Amino acid sequence: MPAAAQRVENLPPYLFARIEQLIAEKRAAGVDIISLGIGDPDQPTPEHIREEARKQIEVPENHRYPTSRGMLAFRQAVARYYARRFGLELDPEQEVVTLIGSKEGIAFISWCYLNPGDLALVPDPGYPVYAGGAILAGGVPYYFPLRPEKGFLPSLEDIPTEVARQAKVLFINYPNNPTAAVASSDFFAEVVAFARDFDLLVCHDAAYVEVAFDGYRPPSFLATPGAKEVGIEFGSLSKPYNMTGWRLGWAAGCREAVELLGRFKSNIDSGAFQVVQHAGVKALEGPQECVEQMVALYRERRDLAVAAFREMGWRVEPPKATFYLWLPVPDGFSSAAFATHLVEEAGVVVTPGTGYGRNGEGFFRVSLTLPTARLKEALQRIRRVLGKVSFAHV
Image (cartoon, rainbow, N blue to C red):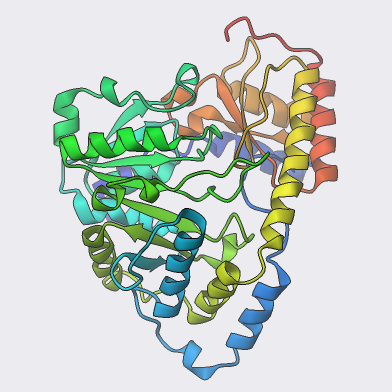
């Protein structure tokens, strides 16, 4: 066999591999494993969306190749969503492109802008695809830290001027995975100014913008004055409508970036299945009570988990958004060692913070996307194994 391409060899190792091996071993031995590790909604896609898909799959025209940029009807639905939700006007023909899940666009945008050796500014900890897409495009990630004392917002002024001048794209993500941090419109205004100063394309991952609690309504980066000239925002139907497996999202914003992404996609894929796009229109424009019910369910699970971890000794505030908790590991553990300990002793999976970057060390992520009864069982197991914990290092 020929050697693997260097671009693939350059990808960082999958740090969750050892825990996956432990899970397989435990399950093979008959152990009941509960996973708090993957952010994949456990509830079904709402019925009215599924019904639309059933209807559209009977339409022969939907079985043909779609356009790589996406059906205009879906892009119009996205534009109307932005107008309703954020008061922002988008041209659906030139400022929106359909994606086969937002992950695709997040990876491909680096291919549109990075030449070999170009820099991408990447949050650490952060969703691994930001760096992975840059590496596969031949670019070089420059990791900027997200620290708890700053509310897991970057200190843009700490990025060296020479680095910022060499960079071409900046990735941000609020509400944030994995930290569950949120950002204000004032912060987004700082990002716009930074992008103008250094001629950067801002790439905002807005996958969790509709999963928010206690009256909080996350803003869109694109609604910030000037943002549409310097940025692109990635939206997803996966989280608000439990459509992770359907693979449908969009990129919106800067016309040049949208055009480049659409042009790149036309050479890589044949677009999203039209049945799925019709279902996406129904999701965005149909009844929204399903989103409210989903958010209420995650709020119930959030409150349950926060109370349980507080009883065990964690000082944790309920996150305003996402379905994650980002918690410090107890004294005496690294992130990976703590995750391994929970699998071995409690049969519970959590994600070690180092899976999201070097600055994730000392933390672990809990996902609330599992049935509430299983979440309660997982928390009881953790309490039995750990008892009361301490955090002298925090």
